Each structure stands twice: as C-alpha cells, then as structure tokens.
Image (cartoon, rainbow, N blue to C red; front, top):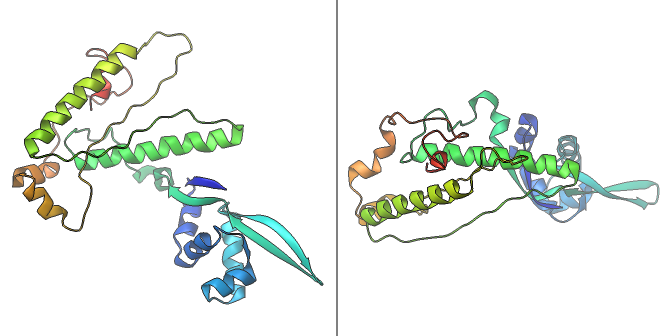
Length: 236
C-alpha cells in the first residue's frame, strides 16, 4: 500500500468524494471483505458490494486475496493507498494556473503554486510508479513566529534574495542533458480558529490583510528561462 496516491481522473475523484465510499476507503486501511465492511460500517452488504466494485473500477481499492469458505469465495479488498490527494488535473480547464496572475503577495497565487505542485509531483509519481522508478525530490517544512508584520516582510525579502542567489549559482541553461527542476517557496500563516484576531495581534493593518484583494501588478510570467539575470524566475 502506498502512503499517498494521487487521483488524476475526474471520475475517480468523484468516486473518492462520495461519503460512503470515503468511509469504505478509510476502513480498508486494513483488508476486509464486503461482509466485514458491512459489519464495521453498519451498512447493508449489498450496498457495500456495489461501492466496492465502483472503487475497484477506479483503482482506489484492489483485491488482496480470495478465501474459499465452503461453496462461497470471499473476496478481500484493501485500499491502494493510506491517503489520497486529488490533483488539480482532475478539474481540467478550470484548474489553478499560477501564470494567470503572478503576484508574490497574493495568497491566491500561493494557492495556485501549491496546486501546480500537487499536479506536477502527482504526475511524476504516477509515471515513476509505472516505470518502477523513484522520483527525485526534496522538501523543507518549518515554522517561524514573527514579532511583527515588518519582521515578516524583512524575512520574506531575505529569503527571496537567498533563493535567487542559489538559483543563480547553480542554474546552467546550456548544460548537456541537464534537467529542469522547479523551486517553490511559500510563506503563510498557520490557520487557527482565531486567525483573524491573530493577524491583528501580529501588528497587521487592514491594508495588509486585504492586500490579496487588490489587482496584481504587472509581472513577468516566464518562469522557465531567466531573462533578467540568473535565478530571477525563482524569486517569486
């Protein structure tokens, strides 16, 4: 069983979001038959059987084993992953696109970057699984508590400069056989039940909090080829 599987097909995404099927997927973290699941979930066996077939059809569950019990063959299923992520690719033309309105200070743009990350890495994982190859990647997850909005702004500027410097040092447009890698760095407040109050307590003005609602300033949208100095495309 995979730790995380990426759902890219719209029909599979729809199947996974059905409340009953979602419960079945969670219950199949441990293999079980339709009869076992019916008992665990308090549902009729026929209904569980129907949903199992749909989940299997979309590759969300798989047959683990078949057990012979008298004249009956019991099919035991398991989920194909412990958890699932729905790729924005399932949304087709309405999936988020960071190129539409790039703006470093926009939370919506940061969300679009995250959506693209899920879509691209999800595609790599799917292709890697088919080829039996591991996907080369790297991630950092950290938390920082700022005393003020000014400190946050200073941190963001230093971080942008550091990333731009690293990209400029290692980027080689003409390297034979070189492979492009995307660097995404984001900064956002950790959501809590009192997030609006926390934002005010951190010293943010109303203008800071509504910054995301302003039209984004004109920004270069080419994120692949540096045109204004090495590493410029990754400063966003």
